[in-house]
Length: 282
Image (cartoon, rainbow, N blue to C red; front, side, top):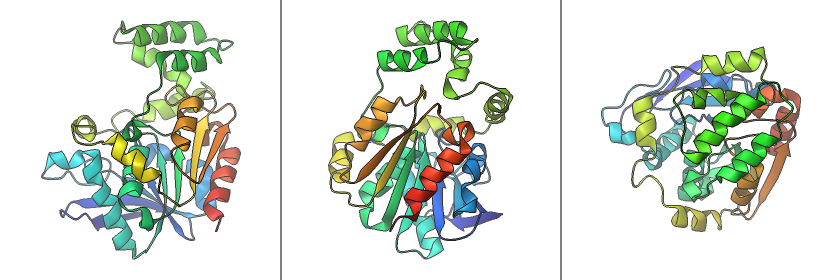
């Protein structure tokens, strides 16, 4: 089911609603990617009612008049408008990849409005943590027995060295999945065209992030936080997620074995069990 609401600037925003029970607001990555690629998050709607937000300008959400409103810190208002639309004092918030930057800024700005925060294979730009090239290479080497490894690893080495050819970025796709099978290939292909490239370019524009201020705010954030890393996730290796988790007073850091950047695809049962149990806690 599709539900729409109005952002504070009047832009009509859409979210995909599934499941029953207390709502969980889900923020996709990309950045500025339609929420379609999240699917049903491995069956999570069997446990909670999910509201998967299409960012402004992507999916079924309208294009705003002011394109500077794509900046991540300004998107915080879209999450707050959804909370107000739902009539909730506090929300459970789940975010994947780049969406974690938005969720983090929301938590920093509105700490009393967040009941639980789940960050899934999160991007860490908002807090100024970066994966090193060696960390990515070390994570990639865990896949050395895969039949596609040699070509993909050569492409990754070129990217890390700053010598990437245009097709090298596509050649590393297998590293983002725990299994590079037909389902993973279909999932990767389905994401084509789902991102608003203009919005993505503006997402991290100057002024979007203030890592020292955000880190200080998170140090006083008292709600429970789940940070879930994929064991073989090239995008956000586990050591990076562990460093992110250390910024929160009450964080649970979990590494899903054998999972890549989309852990609900690699082991749906393990992902939903971990996430649903966290979201069900008092």
